[in-house]
Image 1 (cartoon, chains in turn red, brown):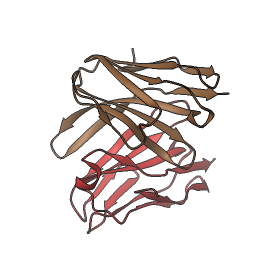
Image 2 (image 1 turned 90 degrees about the vertical axis):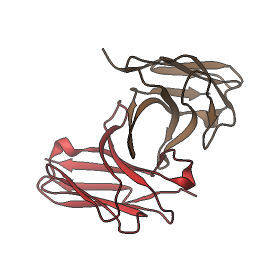
Image 3 (image 1 turned 60 degrees about the horizontal axis):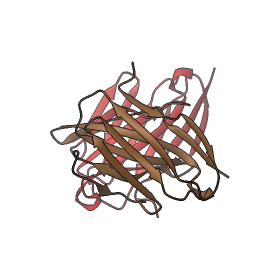
Length: 112
Length: 114
C-alpha cells in the first residue's frame, strides 16, 4: 500500500491546456514537496509547502496544500512542451519518521 | 561538474552476483540517501545516513547494505543480486532548512539483473 497516491498516473494534453495533478493520503504530513523528473535525470525540487491551506505559485505552476495537510495539488496553466516530465509529490511527518515518502508519480506529456 | 555523481550509470549483472553502486557529493551535506525507482511506484527509500557514523534502514532495506566511507561518499551494495532488484537507483543529499528539507538527486544508476 502506497502512503501517497497520485492521480492521474499518465496525462497527455495539448499545448496551451490547463491541468491538475493530485496527491492524496490518509496520513497527515508536516511538509509536502513536489519534484519534476526528466528522462535520464534525477528529480528536481519545485516547491515545499508546510502550512495547511497554503498556496504557492511558481510562474504557471500553482501548488496547494490541503487544509488537513493530507493532500496536495499541482495546477499548471497553459501547459508547454517544456513541462513534460514525471511529477512526484513527497511527504514527511511523524508517521514517516520525518523522512520523505514519495508518491506514485504522474507522467505528463505536453504535445506541441 | 555535477554536485551529486553516481557510478556506474548503467550496469548489467547476473543473479547471485555482488555489486556496488557508488555516490559522491561536493555539496558538503551531512545527509545522504539511497532510493530505488520502479514504474508506477515512485521512489522508495532504501537506506539513509545523517553523518559518517549514522546508518538507518528505509522502507525497503532487505537485500541491500550501505557504507558511508566519508561525508562525501555513500555506497550501496547488493549482496546477492536478484532479478526483482532491477530498477533505477538514485542517490540524494540534503540540507535541513527549517521545516523543509531540500534533497538533491544524482543522475541515477540503471541496474539490470539477469
